[in-house]
Image 1: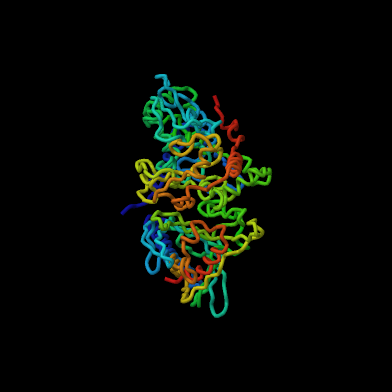
Image 2: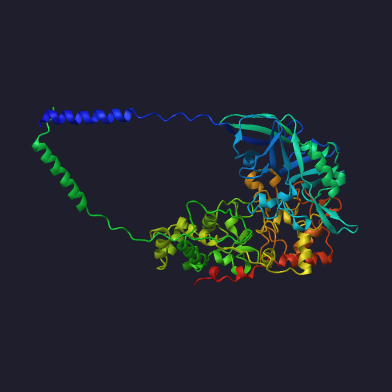
Length: 264
Length: 368
């Protein structure tokens, strides 16, 4: 074999390699799926504006001058509705903890793959239903710090809304508006049973559309003002600073809670 | 044009062979054969948080913990032993006092008092990165380094400390085992001590055993627990945990209505600048609380009885008191208003938080 032939052969091999590699079929474009994702973002408001913390600038329906220090709460069992069919979103977790001190908690990106389409509405449980409110299910803070004492029924606080209000004397007093399991007491005050104070929240005007391979955000508002006025006007001078053991106030709060959330 | 002939192909082969032979004959450096440190496994007690804080650049190892254990108890750590001023972590963090000093403020090598009383080294594995009374120290490692230079503690320098430790024959091999080389640095000293401190875990008090179903509380202790965990009682649990939070602290900061005037140079406000943090200090863990007096950041209360009396009737009004201090309701409300029996019950419960397994654990004791 002469030198020309060798050179020619090598060149041919290179060309063949280059050709075969360039002819590889490009990866086919993935066809769009029929699933998408949902995210709930929580916004804390007083009436129609974002809440300003630690500022004594609000007056509730009872006339109490009031400030909010922090709000921490759970919602669970989010359910979406489409043409009369309901789907509970519980891909990774059935509940979510929102904490005004931890901004990342104010988003709840659901793990569930949801069929594309327009959904009529959305609902959730404020707190946990009795079956889901199980002591020791959280061992890590901040959720674990929401535990509700066993003596008072166990499980977890649905909400801690901590703030202050101005007393008639002009001084400020602490308001721990904490919701959770209630107690049934006998005539002398001994606890004889417990009450599930959680409630379902059905949001009007909560239609949303899930698109293929995209995440749809549904922004919600918790209007703190509503906790104290609709339908029950709650006077902090009457209920005082602590309500975990006052079932009558828990019921008032529960009824007001139906109107606390809306879609932004 | 380049022509490939027999001469070329032979030369090419020769070059390849020479290259192969020469590379095979290269003298390989003799590796410093130090076995990799053995990962240290932390066993999480039942019901305790499964999330904990170990810095990525300081993984726990058996050798690191062992080195830290020795350094923690070695009075030469101050770097001033030759000046007659030996001091180490254990000088103020005494095992029998839950790794607190049990007397109040610490006394440094120069006789100066620390600004506030000591905090115990207990369950710091779960501290979220807010060490000290105001949470200004981000890690145990940083705390060790600050202790070395603090005028009220070692009042030393990293150079003195490193020099002192390096001169002790037992240590360089231990550093080699823990960190791969025998080099002694302040950073490594801090890392080793931090590893040891993260093993100081308390989880076997009577209350722990009660939660685990292994032991019963007495009637008085049970009544105390009810007072501890009810708003109509003493309402301690919102800041100090309980059955659902066995750390017995939230590791958060509260103005607990001790004063009406505040030192905003050392409170939580000095760190965050938030008005809600004025006069706020860490809610310390109540584990082993009977062993860690005097109480509050400035040690103003000598006994648990003093503390209980304070929360019962001694709250001081200010607009900065934390909302959780709802018992503060002037002009009449200055506390939980406990009767003598309730005070006794609450104290009985607090004593169930003492963990003698921890305070006598030989793995945490002085190794010298």
